[in-house]
Image (cartoon, rainbow, N blue to C red; front, side, top):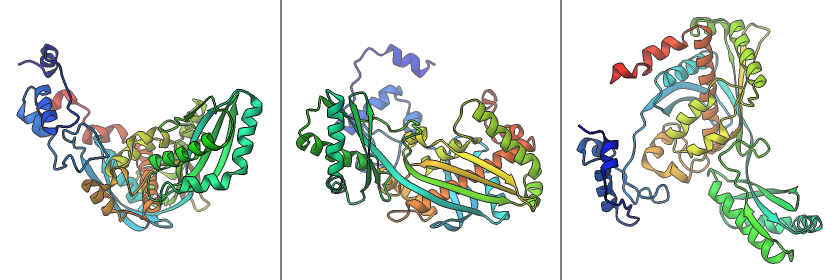
Length: 394
């Protein structure tokens, strides 16, 4: 039997993706899969083309990601208060078990305190002028009209709030930036629409000869000076008894391990001082219908710890950039309405609660993985729960 790649290579017909006919796209899918009914069925979904308008183009099906339940995690936030069973979507065996172990330890130690310390979304436009004097004139003109420009940006969306301007020079290029808040939406497209309205006004009314003006493509990549989304810190005090009985290690060893990996990561140039924050973040983003590409921007997390005077372990996780939403994007699809509903985070007024829950789960994951490393259980856990022997499985 020929492999699918061989069959594809032997095709001589010209492939065409119909932009208007779902039936034609499904026919093309069948051709790409050599009319293998089992493979075609694997991509079937209850979603329809009308369901996913605005989420995907050239729609032909969906790919399933297994969903597991983590927790319960006990959260004491400003908006998230109580126990939460949290869905996580992943293909990595041991991940949900490890996060659940950490959540169990946090709960047994009194839970996790969480606070959101910042909320912002940045957008910028580059303007190229002929001289440095004109660059300064552009900044002066904008400064004198900031209130008008902020109001203009806000007029583009009921969720958008424009907070402040900032200005930067590189030669004769000026970057004009606006800091927004975006309500319960993740806010990328909303903020882009706001800055576009500002830019159009500047171009039409400043009277300054602008050689060109282009958006600043800052999204979905780590830029330390351009932090976006929510800044969140989660903190717990792990009881020494819980660390011993459930973590099968001790507080001093756990604290030494955290300090050691923090120092070595810093030595190697990392600004993300954690074990695997992005692992759980990816799982939660998938489960809650978030934009996965923002993981490139959100992956930074800083873990800190200290042994308290009572011999317990205080441990915290700070997330400088957590870009999430509870309205817009994928959150309106039925499956994500369900997963957000599991934690009471559907719709408006819920985004800070979701951010607090995510931070608590991610701290749980750091605890779960750290105790596994300290108790020399990490490899054995992956051997027993993960898919570490693909040849045998096939």
